[in-house]
Image (cartoon, rainbow, N blue to C red; front, side, top):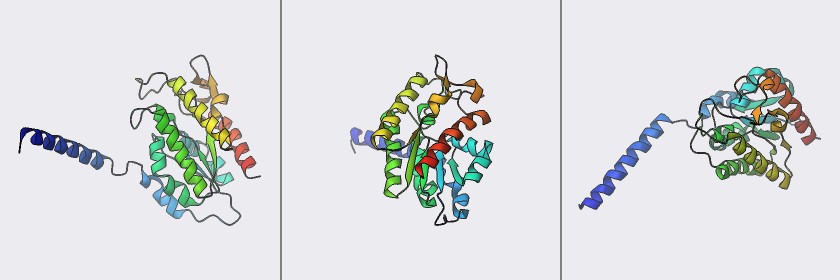
Length: 233
């Protein structure tokens, strides 16, 4: 075996070892386990039921925890997982949305993509993940509401990220344009919650600059409830 072949073999072995290590640490990268039991216990919707699933990250998960009555009273199902990006949403979309047989899904994606929670931010790929979720929904006769990424000036857990407001604005503009072109309802949380020259989340609605407080969720609830009700008319 010549020197070049040995070098190739060593590289392959190193890469393989790395991938095995990554897989060992991320056996449930999409966190299918988070809602596995809840999904199994959720009965099939009644014929007259208009089930709505909220797909999202910690903003959605915190919403259910902060205002559980909003979800229980309206029959909404929360499927947010803290820290997740649109890549993980897409991976678990069948288990946490399609298989629950909703009439409508509300998708809120992008915050953690911009924060680079699962790798370098690529707007095209994030947008593509959102489009893929829409296409999966349509294929399964599920209505969709797209929502804006909430404003944020920076992310405390990753302060190395630059131009956060600009990235969020650009992604929101793209989602909004896609929604308009495809006649999909679009709920603009951003416009109602942004403030200041740094385009931050209004301090009246947050404590950490990213996640809404109870007051912030009240604003979001008014916007999304109106859109849901209009969709079902």
